[in-house]
Length: 231
Image 1 (cartoon, rainbow, N blue to C red):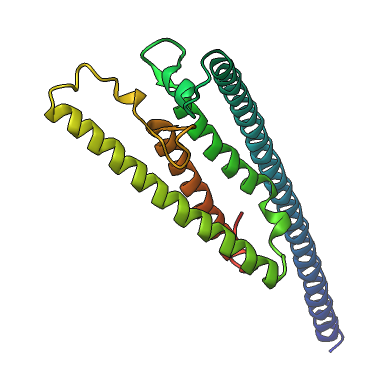
Image 2 (tube, one colour):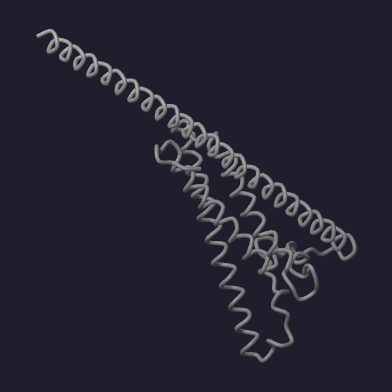
């Protein structure tokens, strides 16, 4: 019996010891898993923050480059237009930007650069600061929506109107056999003020840019406050 009791006691102690070892191993494994998970989460959060920072810096660079480009083109156009007005007493809005190509003659018109840069600048603004205005009051949101949709409708109308007139005048010159003798980029319309006509190429492209910007603004404003909103 003494031997049986010793065997029994040994078996119990071995079982308890094994349970303690297993429990300790489980605890260590669990703690390691938790620590590893927390570390991975921290690394993931850090990587996300770094990625967000790099993305924001990228949009900041594009924004400043686009804004500087717009200022340079606009200043150049205003300078030449003012000089032409003082010399001749006449002015055609946007004609200077249509007649000037960069980087060499026959390449892209400055008005095309201005159109693209204006859209890029607006898009970068929404990416950089869009999250700061997501919680605006509903009353302000409604007012901004009305303004954006009104500008979009006006810009779309002006774009279609100018494009149709431009196309019609080109077709008329073609039917008269004057297409090769008339520079289609020089076509302008004395509207709304006969003393300050607008170049149709300039008006068409800039109204297209205004429509794209205002439409995107209306979409962004409409998404403000949504849980799934992503800037």
